[in-house]
Amino acid sequence: MKFGKKVLSMLLATGMVMSLAACGGNSDSAATTTDSSDNASAEAASDSAASGEVKTIRISHGQPETHPEHLGLLEFEKYIEENLGDKYQVEIYPNAIMGGTQAALEAMKSGSLDMVVGAASDLEAFNPEYRIFGLPYVFESADHMKTVMDNEEFMAPFYNSTTDSGIVGVSWFYAGTRSFYSKNPINSPDDLKGKKIRVMSSETNVKMAEALGGAGVVMAYSEVYTGLQQGVIDVAESPQIALVSHKHGEVAKYYANDEHQIIPDMVVASTDLMNSISEEDKPVFEEAFKMMSQKEREFWDESEAEVIKEAEDMGVTFEHVDKAPFQAILVPFTEEIIAEDEGLAAKYEQIKALAQ
Image 1 (tube, rainbow, N blue to C red):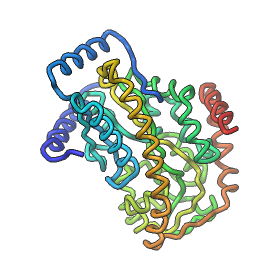
Image 2 (cartoon, helix red, strand yellow):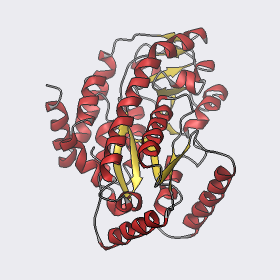
Image 3 (tube, rainbow, N blue to C red):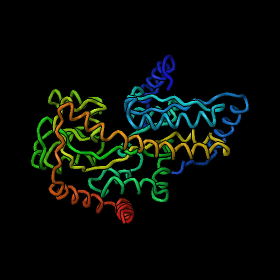
Image 4 (cartoon, rainbow, N blue to C red):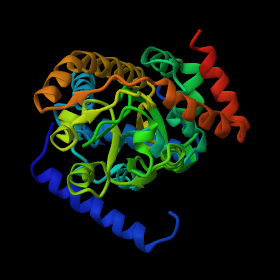
């Protein structure tokens, strides 16, 4: 990973991009698109390669450097530079130093970044069908979710659905099962009634909190610690790793293990980057995208026991609640949303079929 002056220059560039965006108007296999601009990108890449110029691939994500996602990206960096180091170098920007996911996506669309990692729900604005991944209890288990995400036939339409916005899906990361946690015990949905619940930025998540009798509060992930500490929110919901990686276990001592969502993180790239990769180099990138996803899951599996121990050392109590009362509220909530959208209903049936 490379920082120093390049980070400063990138931050300045991103700031300029976001300022311009504010002033203007609306602005599994590795997927690629082709149009007239693609040819220009490919020709530019060919000219760069011929001149010996090394292309820098800049990647932004919101996790710390010890997180499985960062470690997976380091494997991507290593693979690309070992196999195509004469043409590409990789720079990884962790801890949301390039801004939150939405800001990073805007920076990528403008050319300041090349790849971004963010939750599937962050892509709902580009394709509403990404909502399917955030619906409560849509996956029966983590293994079911991984089977779905590794199914190229199922995922290809998602990956390619955002190309008109200059974004293409290239891979995915396992991000754990999400449960509620708080300063006070959460043993049933009744303990969430009237509570301010921090959720990710999507209409589905806000409505989920409301279905449980709480109030959904959209808040940046970086603000959750102080939000819990100062009482701005009463409850948060994330995988167990957040208790350690972002120190939430210092201010929230009860973790419910209701496992209401299993939302993947998506790895997306700019169409400019993908269209610039030569036919000769594409297989290397395709292998790198698959490899880093697998490696990230291995790092996640290796860290789970340690995460629980560290959280318990912080004084966190893991409550193995009865999921049935949560499911009794949230499964009908999911089914109601699906019934209103034929596209989601079809995806839902495909997901359920892959559980068998």
